[in-house]
Figure 1 (cartoon, rainbow, N blue to C red):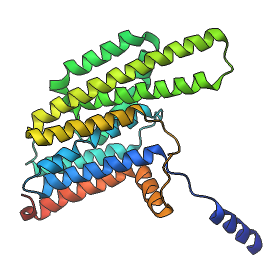
Figure 2 (figure 1 turned 90 degrees about the vertical axis):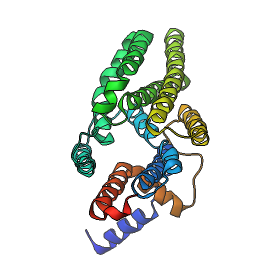
Figure 3 (figure 1 turned 90 degrees about the horizontal axis):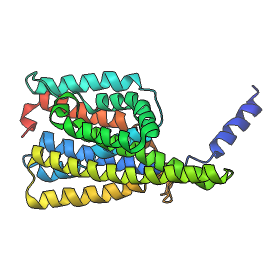
Figure 4 (figure 1 turned 60 degrees about the horizontal axis):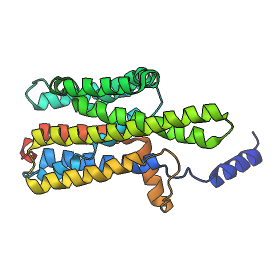
Length: 286
């Protein structure tokens, strides 16, 4: 390539507008801020109750987005990073058993998602009720097997139903179908809409119940958790992946895009750093 051609290529590339901020970027940024607050309070603060309260808003978006996404590939780095983080946590707990890290839970959900989707599409309400009932039944056991246990699976089911509802709305609105097929698609979309609302309600109630059992929040902290989770749940019910209506200045937008792309890596670095700091400098731990 000549120098002139290379210069023109570089000039064209430099003029390419950056990708708009996606709704997912905002959601992941909120989640990573909340998880950082929760970890900071847990590792370094004597009174961690407020930090833990805000940290409760981190996990639901992660599970929701894995249920919402249609990607079937499980990145290998989810597995090995999840194993490393699990071992770090166990080492700081005198090598006692700890629930495998959330990354391993997310990997498991991504593997199971296509089969769950097929089950719900084929059997509708029967499959949905069976799944929810199963998740509720295994709550006491699942928490010891995977991080956040069946709570996370319920949020992922909500995400899957939300995706089916959003896709159904888009399909019905695209036109081009026969009257019969349109009626069938509309009925399926309405069913998905009801499922996603019920899944959201069950996931939120179970999440508050289980987290309160673990943290025993005082009344004011619990009220904040319930209110914040209510706002988050409404936001997730309105969630649709795509360009955000709010486009911040480019400096902020570039940060949001970076967090949106590397959310789990940021989470892993932050958690591993905290685990290592308290391991190497125990006096920093309350």
